[in-house]
Length: 479
Image (tube, rainbow, N blue to C red):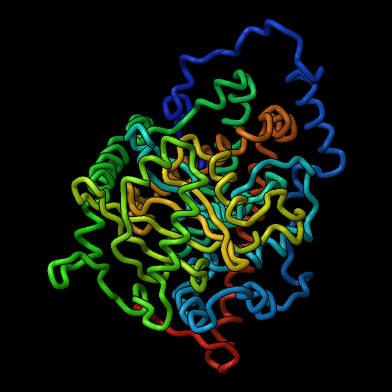
């Protein structure tokens, strides 16, 4: 792609996206409580450039990397259901992007070998393009946000944006996009991240906290084609409620609703009494909820329980689908009870401060998301941690494969802006913004890194493919 074409790329209108036009920097009516003003925080951020220059983020040389991909993946399977490991590998080997989705532990290992700013925030830990999407807020608004927190942990902010940028180039290649254009999409994501943090650095703490991305607002920030696609996706997402999930996932047996078996994705485990076990777990989970939500869940009773297999990276974790019915009218509710394992970031960012991995997941989600599932909770049993959430409550994700090139670039920027908003809830944006500055040095370095790491991802994917062909690992397709 030539210079002229690159200069015509339209940046996403972040002001429209987040409603920032009506917000201005709040007048400072008191001295900062800890004596650190926005200017002080920005100065600290700028000072970090001495230790880690912005162009240093371009660094990734595959020839210098000495690590065993197979060993890292075998280590990542610890604590998972052994018989599902071949399914996990099978899903990962579908294509390089699927492999990337299942390899957050490998990238966390790699990022730990690179210099970082030391500026930490609550990180997603697995911020790739498919881990963003729409869902219903408790007020029934359709919002767009980060939506996967299995790996969340307090860690340097650049871990997330580098994983997101790498996923953009990998997905762009998977779509058959021009290599330079895929790189430009990663650069534009860095720009969106940097520019939104700069804007949020001028807002008050409460204004930052209240910011959210409404799906309806996304439409107004796009061109006409993008606007039509978003509205179509929103209509589809609004239909995905408990009733729709109930009709799709259940069947009538002897006049009673039961979860439909769909081996190996959904199965009733006849060897163990999952029904009784999960019923006990849910009673304990309910006791951890605020009183209003506890009263709500007490209005339901468990009807059926089945084991389920979800995602790519999550395959092998213990996960249950639970069908409940309201005691008063029989209306259905579907919950997911999912095992939480240690974050892939822990060996490099330090141990979690939370008492359990499920609590780490839930608290990280509450901290990063603008609005969260009212059924979100956690419980531990038999030295295993589980978190609970509602299944498919108006949840929707973008079809990356169906996007036009311009739509793909818009979506890359949208995810990066969403990540910036999520990071700003636990780390004052002035710190990161001070480091990033007002020019595009970091953006360009991010693009270079994303291309280099996409190359590394393809090499690692080939290693896994060859290992499967040679019988060193077992990979089974469940499609």
